[in-house]
Length: 155
Image (cartoon, rainbow, N blue to C red; front, top):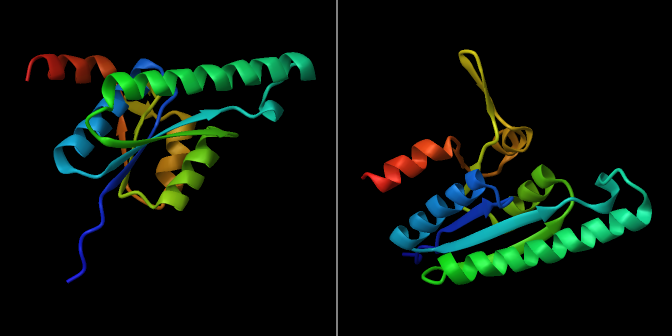
């Protein structure tokens, strides 16, 4: 009988409250069930920035540096009790998330949505929508951080 492979969970973050709540959930899943957590942040490529070349390069470099520091901080403060890997990519977020999901073949992607409620319908954020429709694995989305946080505080 072949030994079971360690579970891998990919969690893209953009450092807002929703994505950090999704990271919290992904962390708990890995901690409670074993496996590895891959935390991904995508810095927009210079081509995606609309200003002139020098300011764009400065903005891109500072964003990349900030992202690197923030990922390290999150790992140090919150992920020390699980096997984790920090990934920093440049490009379009949905494309990079899908590329990493294809490369790593995780069992699941856990990510936040930035959707809006439109009357009786809920509209997903564009990145989450693309990832849900094109992902090679299941995608667990998390929205409404306030609800998640209140349930966590009062189990």
